[in-house]
Length: 286
Image: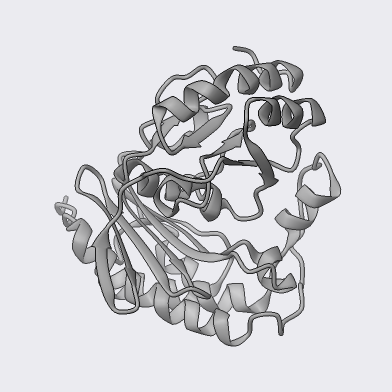
């Protein structure tokens, strides 16, 4: 049996960063100019906002994914693949069984993309044995590219300059999911935080690195795509945990029932009482 190639994480990010920029260029060109063709859904959603977000799909998503997959197939054809969309090049990876799994979302925040609500991203993550070891997030409208390698830190490239990223003082803004109750919103505001509904998984999960706010909170099983950005926040020095306060180390989230991404452990501690109350209201066992 042939030995599987070893992936150098920095080389992986170099290849996929270029592809992400190319995919982002296509998305930027068609920003606000394409129709929502909509996915077929196989589950019931809590409200119309959740349903619309999950159903959003454009032809640009499909084209952007093909750009990413063609680069992946050329340089890393042996990996397993967890794609967002069903595009032709997915078939090249169908029979692969690898320790490495590449997770992609060609346009995370498609509903924002269609309705011109600004924040959307191209995201790629690399899992090895079910733990994220490398991640990138490219925001086409700002040109910011965030990259992280496990235990090696996080960088951002913008305007041709690359610099390390460290979580720091951030606005007292908490991103909450669309299914959050009014009671939860009230508790957060009484604790001194402003709240805003998150509309882009990348925005939610990279919040510690991008300094867009103090924390984001997710009370259902977070998707493996949402967690691509958690490695970026981890490597920037953010604090990741579940509703119980147990640390999250960017593993595959299949056994999780909640996720908190905070700028610091202190911020998370301030939020956890309200988060636990909301978990009880939502029927999660703590």
